[in-house]
Length: 360
Ligand code: PEP
Ligand code: MN
Image (cartoon, rainbow, N blue to C red; front, side):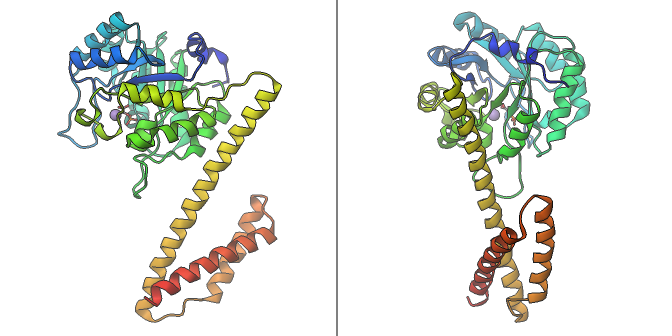
């Protein structure tokens, strides 16, 4: 899929002075709810009103969406407010209904992107559409799968494209609902600089008080827009209550965000510099997280050694690690001297951790 600016024409056409905002409830619940939220969002930077009509739920028994009737509510909201409409489609039947109801933007959810069969079914149903189609990243951190889904849309002659970064699920507990793994989205952006990249801080964080911070990181990384779940009574929402914000919080969030625009040469330089710095911050955070994980594993080794009364320092093993890392480092352009210094420091911290466990 060659890089081609035509894929972002739909976005450029809006002529926005700020990042694109897609906002609205996780799920359409009632007609009154959809209309009330839409009217409150009229005062914000929102261009597209989102609402889930069919909800993919990890476990059965949760609210699974109101179904096709909700599309009529979206249509009415559009008529009354002028907001464009957006919903998730997960099979051919959804696509047919969404197109019948003239929904402006359709997105493919994270649980659908993982399945090439379902993605192909959706692509076939959408063939040649002039609607906007956005592909969420798959739940698992697999860049190729994400790109593959986008390619299937492109091959189906869909011109108005984009992707949504909503984070990746992990078995490990983390402060995020879905780990952002920013590097994957940055890699995507490097390969496809012309495809609009939208961040969904709601599903990344799972918590409304972290949405500003994650949105800011996305804008620092030069994302084109945000999708933020918005509800007039978030705590009583029928799905994803903890992560939704009120329309007035959304307005505040968009005011608090620092937006960097490329204007002249100097501004272009500054904006590129802050984008690269934001990438460095993401990588540094990942380094700290990885080192923290390493030390937790060292604690577990300490506990195991304690049961056998084994010495903390085992030089043979340490020399093996060092030898391997020097070779590995060389392949990544890292000097032997640097690897020695870093790994000595890591090893020392690891020994401290193990000793603490053994002597406790
Ligand atoms: C949603 O946007 O409400 C949703 C279900 O998202 P995801 O596919 O990212 O989980
Ligand atoms: Mn949701």
